[in-house]
Length: 104
Image (tube, rainbow, N blue to C red):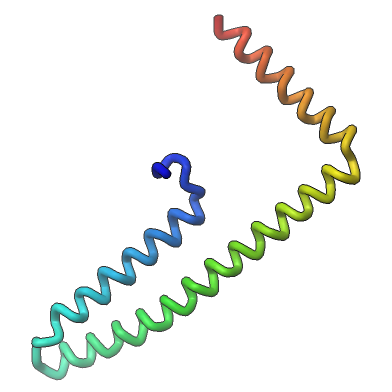
C-alpha cells in the first residue's frame, strides 16, 4: 500500500511508532556514555518512551473501535433508509457526471 492510500490516522500511528523506535535506538546508542546528566536524561527518555508506547497502543485501539462504531452506524443507516442511500448515491453520481462532462 502506498502512502497516498494510507488513511491519515494509520500514517500518524506509523510515524509515531517510528519516532519511538528511533528514540529507543538513541537510548541504546548512548548506553556507554557516562555522567550524571546523561544517565538522568536517558532515564527520563526511557520513562517517556514507555508512556508514549502505552498511549500509542491505547490510541490505536480507540481508533479501531471508533472505526467499527462508525461502520456499524453507516451500515445500520443504509439498512434502515435504503431509498435515501440510493437517492444520495444517485445525486453524487449525477454531480460527478456533470462535472466530468464539463471537462470535455
